[in-house]
Image (cartoon, rainbow, N blue to C red):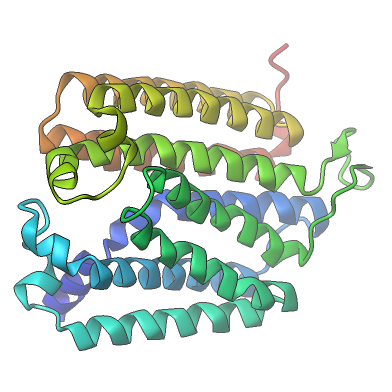
Length: 313
């Protein structure tokens, strides 16, 4: 049983859920602070199910449509669908069941989430085809991942409030900025994804160029593309700073943001100085996993422990 679970987890890269899930949970917590004070267990579980199902559907779809290229690429030719550990029929079934699970979770949340669920599935799945016709495939993936905080916000509020209003019972003494809060977080996630997906794509520069696949790494070369990735991460950090300001966060959040900046700089140092697969994996997965977890931790601490909001000025 453990072997089977590991095989399927490896097939859809379940560990990579650490990228989007913390941002979705952070968005959910902040949205609940603005309306109800804390998300209920039902909303939390449904958001969790929706996140896992959407990501599983997207990864299964990716493995299915890319199996021809995966079989030719030395880096990916040992994936379960290529080696035969998982059959094509099983992969298609997993993709379909995951999509159904996502729609069901969205239905359980609220009518708007249910109506938008097909749109979300289109975005997260269609990314896998973009490398065939556009160099900006990283941007599409960033937009797909940015749906996580937007969806989690809608799961709590059930709508987007576009007009700012004065915070009343929350006692924050600040404005509620409504939809601008999750949109700012979504922008940060988009820029973050663009940056580290470019880093990840440097591994396949030669293969993609030889087989007619598109990316900014192929278009501009690895070093120029890494410069764009660095700029994307700088703007991502600025968007996170704006998010903290809109939420009236104080000391804990800014300490976390300082740590995140240090990790981003380390990520790009590794990506530029050491191009081997092990180092790219550290820069791509481990550091970014820590970044998302730090962001979730400091955001939750600001919401749960408002008495710890010591002024830093």
